[in-house]
Length: 126
Image (cartoon, rainbow, N blue to C red; front, top):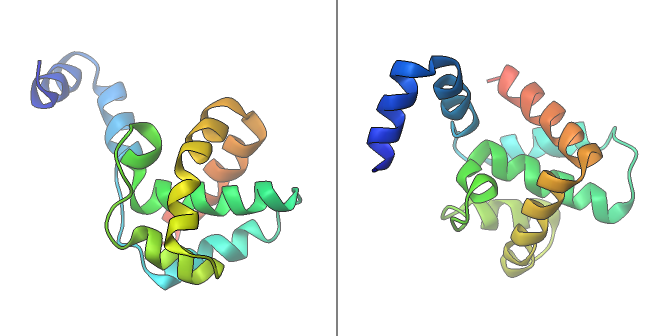
């Protein structure tokens, strides 16, 4: 089965699931304004410093390159560099955190809840 066949099947027989998949994989351009919005919202969340940085990385990836978190795809071109510039780290440092970001988003409820809240707020301001 191809992804088009799966999408057609879901749309026909499970429209709610198809809509959720479409919403989760919807992305927006990774601009410095998007990252700044994520940074400002993440600043209000009380977490450990390592969690704080991961929350920012995961939130930005879900907004600008969601397939990176939900699948094993690489980060979209330009996303890691924009994020790295905003965080004051190297692009390689961001890229190295991707696997860790996937793990914590899928396995740690506190991280997932914080990230989902930020993503929802940023998308709400589009």
